[in-house]
Length: 392
Image (cartoon, rainbow, N blue to C red):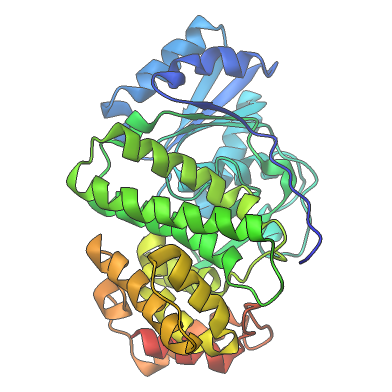
C-alpha cells in the first residue's frame, strides 16, 4: 500500500432546492463580482439561470455571464472568460453545469492568477500560481469535477485535449440537487454513469497492495452506479436513483477511491483524450468504447485483480482459473455498457478509423513517442496503437 494524502475542502449542499441558497453562499465568500459560467441555453430554458440570478440579486451580489461551454471545453472560451473577468473585476466564478463547465471555470480561475498563457499549465511547462475561487451548481452527474483537483481543456488548434491537476482549484462549495439532472437525455445520463465508473476503475486497477477498505468502497460504488443506471434508463425521473448517481460521481473523483492505490492507472483516460480532442466524441462514450480493449490487453499482468473485480462487483464465482474469471468480469462490464446503450468499440462510437488515423492517435497520445502511460501495465506507443486497433 502506498502512502497517501486525502484533501477534500469542498462544502457540499445536497438535495432538493439547494440551488436557491446560491446567493447567500457566494456572498459568504466575500466577493465583489461573480462570473456565472454555463453551457448552452438549456440552463436558461429550464429556469435555473433565472433562479440563480434572482438569488444573487437578493443577496446583493453583482454578476456577469459567460455561456457557450461545449463538451470537451475549448481553450478559446477560456481566453474569452479571462479577458471578461479582468475587464469586469470578477473575483469569484460560479460554474452552472457539468464537468465541461466546471473545468472551463477552473481554467479561467487559473488564468486570472498568472501572467502569460494559461495553456502552459495544460502543456505542463508551468505550475499554477493561484486560482480564483470557484463555486458549482451541478446539473450533470459525471465528471466529479465539482469536488476534484482536475481540469481538462481542449485546444482547438491541433485538437489537443490535456488535463491539469492542482489542489488549489477545488471548488469552495458544490450545490447538488439531483432534480436538476432529470431533464438529461438518456445518452447523457449513461455517459455520465460510465465516466463515474471509469474514475473508480482507473484507481482500482493497480499492481500494488491496496487497502481493503478502499477496495470495498470502490466495489460498492461501482455496484451502486450499475444498479441505479439501469433504473434511470427506465425511470429517468427517479429521484433516489438520481441522488445515488450524483453522490457517486463526487465520491469517485474527490480522491476517496484512490487512497492507498498509488494514484491509479489512467491509461484509458489518456487514450480517450485523443479521441475527444481529435473527433470531439462524448467523454463517457469514448471511455466505454476503449475500456474493454485496454482491459483485455493488460489483464494478464495481474489476473487476480481483475478476478477480484469480477467477483466483488458482478458476483461471478472465482475458481482456480483467475484468467477465466477476469475475462468474465471484463465481458460483464461491457454487457453493462451495452445495456445502457454505450458503445464498446470505436465503430459503435461512430468512428471507422484507418490504420494511419490510429497510428496518428497513438503518436499524439505518446507525445510523439516520448512517454508511456498507465501503471497497471506501462504502455508505449506501440501498445497504444494495438489497443486502438483492438477497439476498432
